[in-house]
Image (cartoon, rainbow over all chains, first blue to last red; front, side):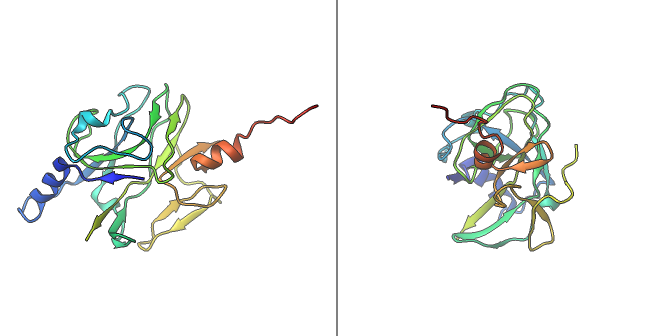
Length: 144
Length: 58
């Protein structure tokens, strides 16, 4: 399993601290089809690099409210937190082969900037077919 | 669409939040699929729930 805060996501985080900006009330969870089930983009990745699932077949990014992020705890490699599980709408068309999820700063498909992207923890690509319903648990870790 | 199912395996996090676990293996997984009224991880969905209903014949 791979994960990354691409440069554009780190820039957003820096803008909040130590540069004093206001953190977002919401972030948005999306699914990507680029890379593989065990690899993610480079530091230079931008939203187009991730090849988000097309905005069709009832796929839309799902809102993660800031309050849904859980208590920060120690992990094997740093401090991590997970948000409440997010259930996507029933697929009304094939979404394709999904290799993981990302957390972005925009609701709009294929737009905005990615804070963080990761594969699913079982490093298995999933094919989301018509009538499938999936639930995703977003989480991330800051390593020290 | 209900997101909480009575009797379904869950794991409580430190902050009291309940996270749905795989109904077959009980693991917390990043992604779960809904099959009827149960959530399954990718592995259990393909190997346990929808295993081919075929038997070898000679």
